[in-house]
Length: 92
Image (cartoon, rainbow, N blue to C red; front, side, top):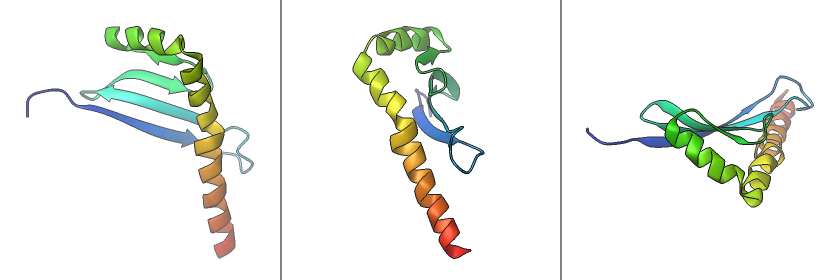
């Protein structure tokens, strides 16, 4: 099919059991290319294309947007990792 395909994915990465090294990543992908990425280690959006750089600059100027994205490491990642770890521990 002709046209554009936009997708995004959220990923939580950690290797320690206490989640102290947890990293939250959100990628915006346009036609299989990462256009913009938010990484909780960096704390801001980074653009990888002309469109991505433009949007990253706009989104990084919004303190509410950045605060919401920075909170995802705890609200989304750690919360869900704790639930999964508890479920696994209950079965062992």
